[in-house]
Length: 352
Image (cartoon, rainbow, N blue to C red; front, side, top):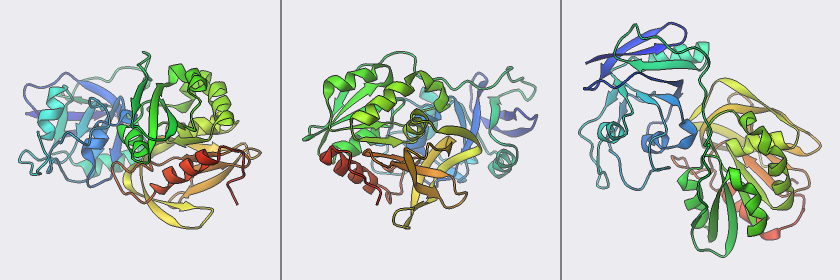
């Protein structure tokens, strides 16, 4: 049946919505440019409270499997695409995208002119949007509030390796913990509300994870983040990268439409090598405390900061996702570099 994507700027786009029609769903509208990896995107906690537009015209052709979930349930508020494949085909598939999202009451609007939607977002920026059955539905007042987790989850462990890593959970992807476990690590996942327990654990290194929303929403946590990074070798991924910059006196700002996809070129300033990365973020580090950090990685397309290294402490950060889910896997070596830092456990200058 007929449905609509209604944008904050007053623009609307027609499509088809399933039956029975879902309740209107509001969120911040963003787009993803990857050809594959939709299951990882749908379950990535960094997409919390967002409506995702897939630019690739056919989504769902390999179905949903039991291995590629990044969290227990979808994080998105809605999905907009051109065509959602019902007849999926893959030997590991257990359901279709429609059935999976339907189970969680996440609306899908398909047969939408996604190219026009994305052009609108690129021109006017990320904004509030709604998927609804009625074109006259009204958006609520005020900006979209992308919530952080308020409840303190339990501490969990992944892997059984010789190196101890504390993964601070701001909305982490399961593949980060899995990638570290594959590298001979015992990974203790600690909710950010319980960060002080890292000192009891005395790990070989600390990873500050990805997560949703504005990094400045974690301003109360910045002193403890700085203390941890000064006490243990540290790696920041996506939101974790931004939080490290803020903790050491830098600043962050919101991009017009963010970086989301599996095809973003990044240059390693140290080696001048360029590699492709998987990204998902709205915010970017736009000012550094240059007495602390140097830029390690830069975006080739717009020259934004993609990663940092501390001048004296064993701290490394990446705005992109080195665990590579979805791919490409060009930057997985960053996890190895972090673990080498953790083995040294010293203040040796790593930027040469």
